[in-house]
Image: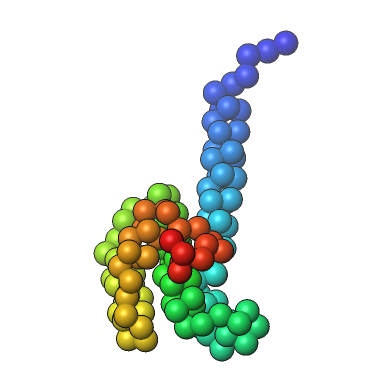
Length: 120
């Protein structure tokens, strides 16, 4: 029987922290991939999922906001994320009139994936 050394404990702690960080990074990357796919594949979404432009635009905003929220939990906030989110709002406004109630509900986490935003 022995007392576990500080060095052994620190190595295990670092290993555990690293593993946790890797998992969190994977989670953030997966969320980013969703938004990025929407951004670059409007035609596929329309043809394969039979969704309209309104669904695509709000979905893109939703997934980016999820990414930004998760990323800033793990890392520091930067203005770049706010700028890009504003760019997405401008893009929505270019195609349709923005429903700021929907945007606010997305930001507050009151809208989840697969929610019918028409009935909220």
